[in-house]
Length: 391
Image (tube, rainbow, N blue to C red; front, side, top):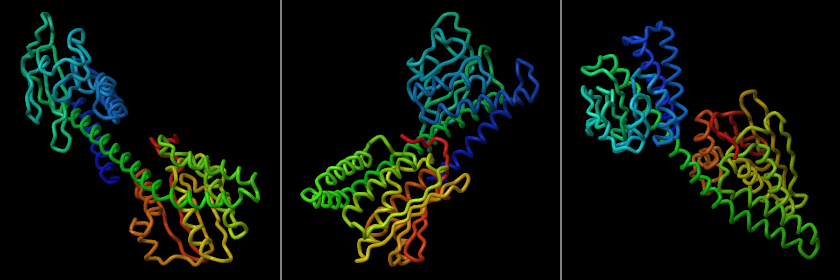
């Protein structure tokens, strides 16, 4: 997924620069110096990008269409889906409007290539528009709409103008395709989070409630506090609209989890936490640290009569953050660790977290398992990533 997004982003940048270059070279009615024309074209191209990241909708088209008119140098520009005008800007805006049928502007064609309409036949008397260039918007060999550039002069349009409109349509198509891929990635991430919740909840709920039950008669006040901790953790883990949280939030609820586990294990579970304050506002996928801690408790403490120590460290690496979750248990076989990260182990915790980190931040981030005096799972993520915000 990350490679595909990178390729599409490259296409977007190439289309932006190409459109700017075509615009500079095309004959202009206004004689701007070449540098000023390029600056205006590139500014218009980059102004389009944020709006179309949400897909091709009436709202995104309305936000992008004015910059598209500047980019192609036309008297008017329209964005349409396969049947309807989504947005319109420029000459004729008093009678050509969003929601109109596409055929009210230019004859509907199923062509998947740029074509010229030398004579626009508008049904409104006095409409000054005379000619148009129609460029299809194509996503993976599927036509989803069109970009229409309209001009007040009649007759044949210049070749360079057709090329500019074609490049602009390629830019729009690339951005819409990028938005679809990002939406798929977000749906995948949410599906993985649902799978993780389904895997964690039975094991954790059983153990937590068993710990509370053990204290009800002997230490009722402590049992009450544990129930509060339990309810707050469950509310956090199953909040539907929180795909991302700050590391400070994740650590707060990891501590609640550990207090519940300490009620179960008593002195057998020892905990050390040392986190650099500079990393606390980094954004992480929700429930990304807790599964690592749960694995450390299960494999480094639960199976040993003497118990063990869980250490959590957060290290500031400048642009990145390193989180280390360690136990002093027997360690893990390297092949088993690789299988767990690939999601082939008996549980889905490590593989799920690793996959969500990579789908969110890229292949350079994720989890690594180290063996030494016990097991350490190292999570690396950026301090900041555009578009990834805590809920």
